[in-house]
Length: 360
Figure 1 (cartoon, helix red, strand yellow):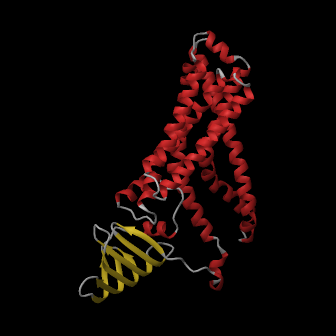
Figure 2: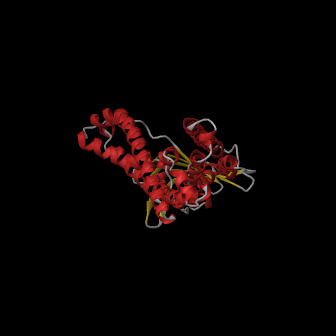
Figure 3: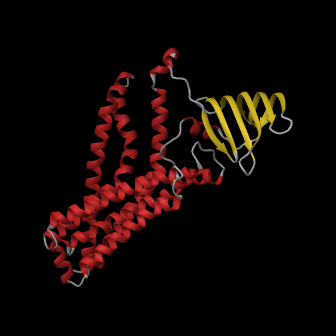
């Protein structure tokens, strides 16, 4: 048996195991989500077709969240099977070192990582936007204004300025209750503008019943019946502000960080999410590394079940610490680069150290 045959066998087995676990976990989470939302879907008169559409449109968001865990379980299952059936011994008998065995699995893990990136960056944001639009369009509350919940004011940053809008239309082309506070580089308020309403047309945003106040000595207030609001705020941007998405594409995050797209969160929040876009797919590689000791050495130090338990615990702690530190980064308690990359590097080092130890 040559090494290319072994590599194909390893790759095929690894991908089949990961895909099987991914399907099982996604189906379980989707079932729990559907059980929780089924009554609401049926109350809206959507019937069985609505349940099917709900399941399909929510699926990318569910799958995107369980990919790292699926890679961990799939890697542990694959390597433990190889070790328990002595296939690892057969591979080593043809001259393959443990590091070469893991290297043979690396391309498959990279394929999973690339697929995870495309899913989280392109598919999940579009699916979430389609779901939110469909969910709002089928809301029966819209037919009974007495039961409708009033829109909450939208707050966001526009460069150094802080903006509050009382309500935004569904298409993002009409706003009411605009208030904007202009600030200098030191964060001190220098002026305030308010407008009763605004509309987006071919020439941009036209505001009506506008009051401008210059903060200083003395305070001066002027009134205009209408004025052009020269800002880079498209109707699509307004829709995102009105109903912010949890899944944000890399391109959109980059525009928010650069200030060419308005976001309702803090700069630390979007900077952390941007780093996570790069780091999240690499979690699959870390999971593979954490599972590596199962294939060699660990069975001599406590049994196969003990090595499986150890790999599972370390992998879950990695996911937990990544989530906690990521939340701290989004809240501004940690620098984004530290919050996102430190658990990835730390647990990769742990996996590498264990692998070297058991082989040494």
